[in-house]
Amino acid sequence: MTEINLRLKNKLNEVFVVGPNDLGIDFLTFYFKKITVRLKIMPFVYVIPSAILLALILYFLFEKLLVRLVTILQYGY
Amino acid sequence: MAINFITSLILVIRNFFLLIFYPYRTMRKISFEKDNYQLLIIAGLVFLYFKFIYFLRDKPYPATLIFLIFLFNFFFTVFFFYCLSKNFEKDVRLRSFIFTFSYSLFPTLIWFLSTSILYIFLPPPRTLSLLGNAFSIFFMAYSLSLLIWKLILVYLALRFSSKQNFFRIFYMMILYLIWFLPYSVLLYYFRFFRVPFI
Image (tube, rainbow over all chains, first blue to last red; front, side, top):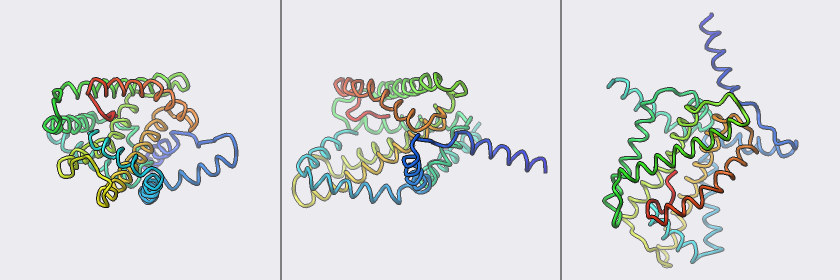
């Protein structure tokens, strides 16, 4: 029983190592939490489609610049 | 010693996959980490990468020199955030910063390694042909997704190490970029890094 209590205490200490984020304005805090809760577990489910969408937008806006940027980045290793 | 090392290696691999699926929970756990072998393994992986690109680069600097510059950048970054956080919160540990920032190097390492391998199989320059455009979109999406993952990990590293709120972390990052961007230009000018390895 004592060991379980100790483990629970350690886990609670770990979970509450930082206080909840408060952005000062209620609706900002609300949307911040709505977004971040999705990024805490398997963020790539949202990150990959967003990155593809962003890349397509960049391509349609700056076609030549994007191709040149990719060339520069490929030399960037 | 060998068993400790293998255990640490397994933990590094495990943490690497957990950072993909559960970045928040994993980074929180990493901030309590005390196993120095894990740091050695991550530093070893970075050193191996520098050794690998030594054979790809034109007129390269020795891998050891590049690695030492990387270590300088890394510890300077860690100390910068540690000293800044110490002003707001007394209960911050340098060890926590070192571990979390070491693990946040994974996206960087993946991007640099994959870019150098792509350089061998699909060498630049890219053209405006259909395949060139398609590859450019793919590469940009791939780079952006790794960049977003990197930003998430750096934010979480700062969140659990400095114990500050979102706005303070945001300001700290702005302050960091104020000196780091000119510094990166300097590194580019001296041909150490074309894209900063951090």
